[in-house]
Structures are given as C-alpha cells and as structure tokens.
Length: 207
Image (cartoon, rainbow, N blue to C red; front, top):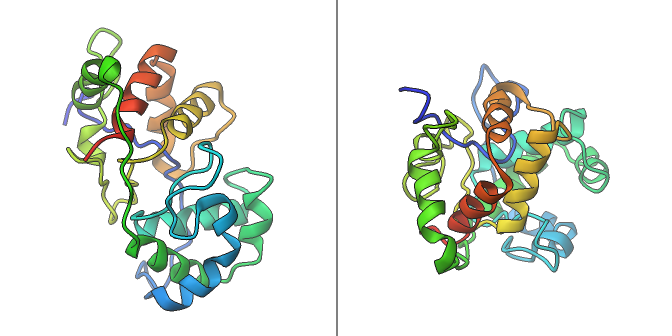
C-alpha cells in the first residue's frame, strides 16, 4: 500500500488495554440500552446524535472502537471535560454492553452538499498527490464503514462539523494521537481548511 492509499482514520485510533490475550468481551445490547440513558442527552437515545453536531453519532459504530475510546477517556489518553467523568464510572463490561447497543442501532445518514461532492469524493478516494496527503478509503472502505478488527471507525453519516473539528484538533495538536493514530496527525497537517470541509461533507452523506 503506498502513501496515497493510507486511510484517513478520523476519530481516535488509540491503544486499548488487552483483555484475555487480546480477546474481546461479549457485549449485551439489552443491558447496554439500559445503561445508555446517561448517554442520550449528547448522543441521542439511539446514538444518532443530540442537539450539538459537535457531539458524534454512535449508532452503527463498532463495539471495538467504542470500547477503545471509552478506555482512552478513562485513562486520560484522550481528553474531554464531559466524557472523562462519564467514562470514569464505567467498568469494562459496561463499555462492551454500551458498544453492543450502539453498534446494533441503525445509523441515519446525512446529506452531502452538491457543491462539495466532487472535491470531497476525490479527497476521500484519492487523497492529494501534490501534498502527499493520503486517501481515506483504504482504512475506512468505500462506504466509510471502517474495520472493526483494526479499530478503524465507521465514519459515514457522521456530522460534518464533528469530523472537521477532529481534523482541526489533530492538526493543531489539541487531540493527541493514541496508538497508531499518529497517521491521523500526519494526514491532518497536510490538509487545508477547504479540504477538511469538503471531505467531511462527503462523509456525512456517504452510503
């Protein structure tokens, strides 16, 4: 794989604590649904987003990625004044149950702007050869559904505002790369604001 087909692994690819020699705990979606009541205000009752587009959608997200990010918040590897205290209260089974519930929910895809569609598609599929900015498709796939085994997140249907904010934070260093997410900082540093907005808008409407 060359540098133009490395993926834009957007939302936090961090290290997670190994469990049982790398095996994942099974999650119980029904138990997770009951536990998710505290998540609904920000992420929506079914994980399709709350009132602020800067809060991510969780519906359809891989359990492995949700658990990884909760562990990152709990350990302080990822910083957020709202999420850190929420994650601090969760046990590992809680995390897997929540992950199973949100993964089981149907993601509601947004719409891409026709004005940004061509540029966003080009960045997503081909990156930018002039600046050696990698494409998104290799890790996140043609439909933006990611790779649960590699903990590459689902990014299709995600709020464009949230995606842009994460890219900006990687570029500025506000968001620290967790684990192999160093590639996200490297990619974001090569992106202009216009490119960020175009590819984020494309992802928002990607099926």
